[in-house]
Length: 237
Image (cartoon, rainbow, N blue to C red; front, side):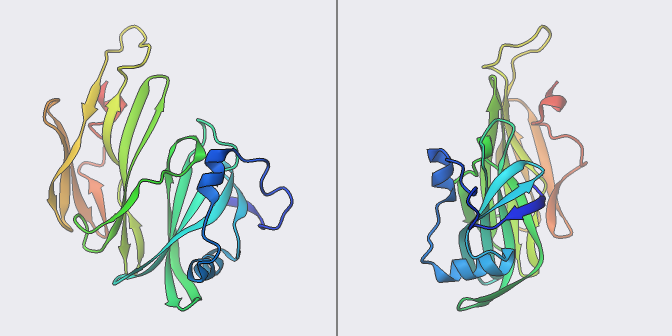
C-alpha cells in the first residue's frame, strides 16, 4: 500500500461521509500525547491524514504505541476510504527512538494487509511464545462467494526494527461455494504446533494429513521449501 500522494488532515475532503465501520476504525485517542508525538515523528502529520496508494485511498491514523524491552514501537492503522471486497486494511509498524513526547524513527516500517473490506482487523495481540522478542500476532481471513482463506500475520518487534515473517496460511474452505464442474469441496484447518521459540514451528491438519514447516532464516520465519503452502487452494487442487 505504498503512498503516491498524501493529503493533510485539515483538508476539507478528508472524510467523504464514511460509514460507521470506517468511523470506528479511524477513531483514536487525541489526548494521548505520546501516541500523537510518535505519529507525527513517523509520518510528519499531527492528525490523521488521507493517503493515495496501490490499494486506493485510505485514512492513516495512530493506533497504539508499545514500550517494550526491545524498544518503542508505533502501530498505525490504514483504513480504506471506500471499503469493498477489492480493498484490504493494513497495519504499519515503526521502530521509534525517544520518549516523553520526543520521538524519531529509524529503519523501514513494516506494513501488512489486514481485514476485509478495507477495514483493519481489531484482532491483533502481542505474544512472546514464538519469537526471541515480542511479536504482533494476528489471525486474519478473507472470504467471498463461499470461498474462505485464513492466515496468521507475525511481526517480531526486534531492537533493530520490526521484521515480518512469511505469511502463515492456516485454513481454506470452498464448502459454501457454488462449485464448478470438476472442483471438489475442500476444508482444511491448520493448527500451529511444535513451537520451538526462536527456531521454528509447524502448521498441521492431522485429519487431512497435511502440514507446513517453518524455520528461522536470518531474522524471520520462512516456510521450508518456499513453495506454495499446503493450505493454499492452488496446492490443494
